[in-house]
Each structure stands twice: as structure tokens, then as C-alpha cells.
Image (cartoon, rainbow, N blue to C red):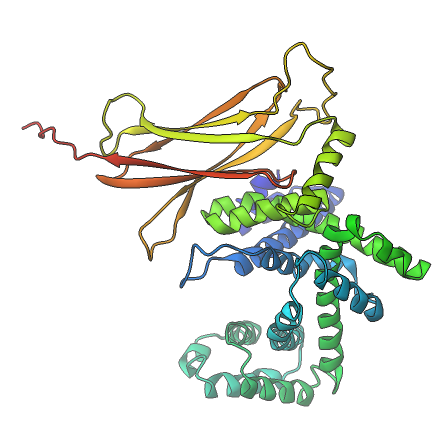
Length: 443
């Protein structure tokens, strides 16, 4: 039903709503609101993690993923409660722990986002305002800044639509000091906001943003820093743990949705970054390479699931499906083999019960990246799971069909990652050459 509703036109949605009972209509309205909020979250993630035009294949850092999650609309469920004394101590601990957060990195992020938050607060309040004087004053600002032409606005008869068009243009414009100063003056003149209200709201939102970021880093570091909680008052420790738990739940929801979103965009580095961050959040560990973190991962797998740490070897080939040579347009197959050196030996030991109804003991994500010439973004051409249901299975194999491109030499980069176990990331390149089709056309 959700997928059907997503694909409906407004007229079709209205027709469906008219046929529903009051209870069904209420449920449908809740579903639509949930869809709208989910869309807002995914638009936020896509906007924040979209590859840059100047360096589209640049690796996406964990810090960028964490700050993207921490500033998503869904995180508003955490509320605004924040003990700045606890946050100061927490930041000092995080910056000094395993180099997960560099000194000054958080402050620099907050400074960059401060004017953006200030601008957005103003625009949201203006969008909700019914003050008659607001539209003409916004018109003056927009025309003077040459964000729109007078003819553009004259073509919009509806005042609300005209106001929203101007607000959208102002939202797209960098928060320039001159425009911001005028908007703040207009907001007070037209009683959109009381004097001093913007400063108060900005301070609250900046504190909340900082808290959310630190909560997610604390979630990663808690297992190796439990003594930190002992140094807090009981109420402070309880509040911190409650907020951390909720932050983890919300971030997990965003990550699961993003695991579906990023491959659809064909964005390679954001897809890999989401997968890496998912494993860290899922395991509450801070690094994919730190020996102490990996040791904790191994202990967790043994104690909780009775499973060994994965020891994998990745291999891949690309070959035509039916012909001996590769020509443009031919059907090809990328064959990916994952050798499990940790596979159980037949007849030895007991097999642990599986913790899911699908009977899956291990799951990995397979991503295939098409490398492009410099200046052209690489593209994600495949994303699919590889699963293990038999612990004795030595090699798992998957195939991905694709069509051979035009004549030339090409490279595929195959990635295999886990979103639930840290330290599992492998990649290998596969090169192939497509020959010219020298068969003459039939006359």
C-alpha cells in the first residue's frame, strides 16, 4: 500500500481518501505524514552526501556521515535537553580517544552551519507567518539582491505562492551578511519574530546539533570508556544513556533507509561510507582497523552468536556469457567469489542456532563500481547482498550480468563490505577489453 501511495497522482490520492471510512482515513493520513517525513530525511541525507562536482570520487569521511545523521529531521525526536557541562567533558574524552574526532573539527563544523541555521529559522518563521506587510518587504529584498525579476513575481497571483517562491530563492542563496541583516530587521518589523528570539533559537539549535553529534560518537566509544559514566552524577549518567540509546535507534533507522537510497543514486563513495558507518553504529565500536576494536568484535561474535571473526578472500572475473571474445553489446557476467577461510569443518563441533528466521549466519554487501576517465564520476553498476546460510560453505559465488560497452579497455572495482561486522571490507579490480565488431553488415 505504501509503494502504491508513493506512485499516486494528487487526484488519485484524493479519490482513494474519499472512499475510506473515518478510521481508514486517519490511518492513511498518518501513513502519508510518515512518508513525508521519511522523504524529508532522505532528501537531507542525499543533499549532505551528494558527491562534489570538483571531486566526485572523493572518499566520504565518517565525520561527514555522523554529522549528516545528527542533523537529519528525524533527530528532532531527541528533543532539546542538553547538559553543556556533560557535553564539554564528553567532547574532551572523544577528541582524546583513538583519533575519531580531531581537535577543532566539531567547532569548525558548527561555525560553518551557524549562519545556515540562523537563515533557516528566519525563513521557516516567515513561511508560517500571515503578516500582510511581509510579502512587499520580502519583494524589496529579493529584487534588490537580483534573486528574481519583477516579471517573475508579477506572474504569480497568489500571495502565499509568491511569498513561498521568494523564500525558496532566499534558502538557495548563501547566508550573505547583508541579506541576513535585512531579513532579521524585517522579521522584527513585521512581528514574525520577537527581538532576541532568533538568538535564543539559534543557541538552542546549535547546542542540540552539538549534542547529537557527540551522542553518536559516544555510542561508538562507550564500550571502551565505561569509567566516564562513573564520573557523572546518577541523573546525568541516566540522561546521557537514555539519549544515547535513542540516538542509536534513530541513526540506525536513517542508515537502513540510506543503504537503499545511495545505490539508487549510483553514488559510489557515499554508498561505501554508509555501509562502513552502519557497521560501526550496529556494533557500537569506533574503528574498522583499530586492534582493540577488532578484538572486541571477535569477542562479541563468539559470545553472542558463537561465530568466528570472518576471514575472507575476494576474487572476481568478467567474461562474455556465450562468445569467446568480448564485443560491444554482448552479454557479460561478472563472477564474484568470496572464500571463507573460517568455514566450519564438516563433522567438527556444534552449529549455533541462527538468530534470524531467514537462516542467514553471515551477510555481506556486494558493490560493483565502474571506473571512468578522470573528470567523469565513477558509477555504481550493481549492489546486492551475498549471504551465508551454511557455515560449512567454503566459497560463496554470485554473478552479475551486464552489457559490454563500446570498444575499449575497462575496469570494474568490486567491493564487499559488512554492515554488521567491523573490519570487513575488501576490493579488487577486474579489467577487460571490448573488441571492435568486425562482422560486416548484411546488405
